[in-house]
Length: 385
Image (cartoon, rainbow, N blue to C red; front, side):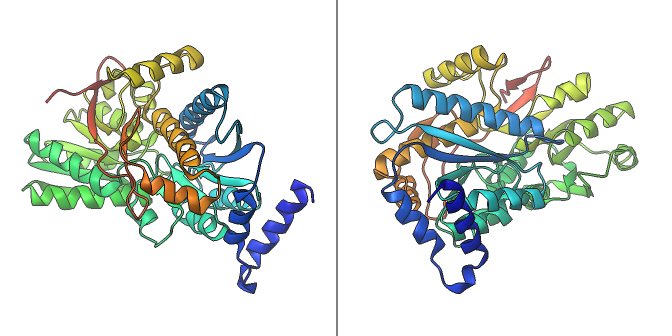
């Protein structure tokens, strides 16, 4: 049977899963004894407003795959081949990408998606079809709280990010803060945790406002209202490019107080769009190319030589996701997803460029350090408190 016909069959079986067919079991059995290239799906926003994030992810994965393949591949010489799926940071598109990957019987792992609002509905498709989802970017806690066995992420979730961002605000001595959050799964999740922790620290959250990531362009009315509220800082729980636009418009109206934000604004668009307005903005992250660890130095040099720029956190996160998946293949001795999932959970202090990786029973990475960076002269610098 040709791969095309197999794909049609798998798509039909998934669509009619109520008939009692064990789609995940069929995939596991097929991949247990498979040979030849290992097919990995890569899902993210490769076009649209968030394309910069998706491109960074793709570059990191491509570099990791090239290194793995040039070193002889995995499992006795099998090479890794990636299949792209552009979700455009939209739920409907992301679902279509997940369905397409689910219809490919050779795909064992999908690295992606970027947005939590896309990853969460896609995860149901991957779990049902027996594919491991390993996201290097989606942080909403709900993703790994659904009782699934094949869903993983290799970065701290919003509970940890929001808590550490609020702790940083407390250490800075901020007493009155406003929150501007994207009206999506990522923005709401981060804003909720940040607000809860801030209140525990005695910080007053004076106001919180949501914005539409697709329609809103003028943020000055809200910012003007906040200008007269004697705020110490503003927290952005959202992604670029809108995060950068908010900061730029704040400076335009003379709002000069500090801005801080989560990993959603950890991209070069912050200064490419915001220019001088982005100077001094605090951003949480999990990676900095200036880290002196040998693995980071090598990765950053190789990445810059190939792509003409230093890696950002999303390139590093995706690079580690691909490398840790390949490690799990070797430890499992197969690419059968249930056995690979067990191998991921059994890893102990696997060292990547973004830090140590240990996965808990839910598929969350645990113990990974969150760092604070600050924009200086059009680049992220490690912030020394």
